[in-house]
Image 1 (tube, rainbow, N blue to C red):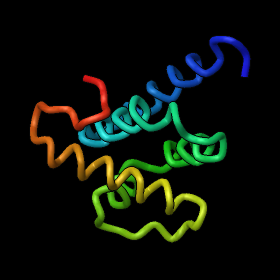
Image 2: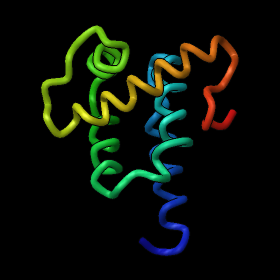
Image 3: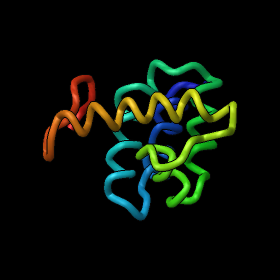
Length: 101
């Protein structure tokens, strides 16, 4: 990746994390700010694919209302569910450990 390329990509992804549900916005941004930097290129590609899902499907996966049956997406969906659980445990208005405000 070119100098500044990773930061530019993260900026584009941050924009795509803006959804119709605030809870999804916050959850996806938590992952982007805390986990994405350490993710492999493959996981980053999967995250971009997850951002293409419609809000109702994404919310159902991440909030545990539906099981993700796509073998490529399922591991990252599980990671995002863990991020969601940390966010929930931190309580309203608080940021989970390892995430930025």
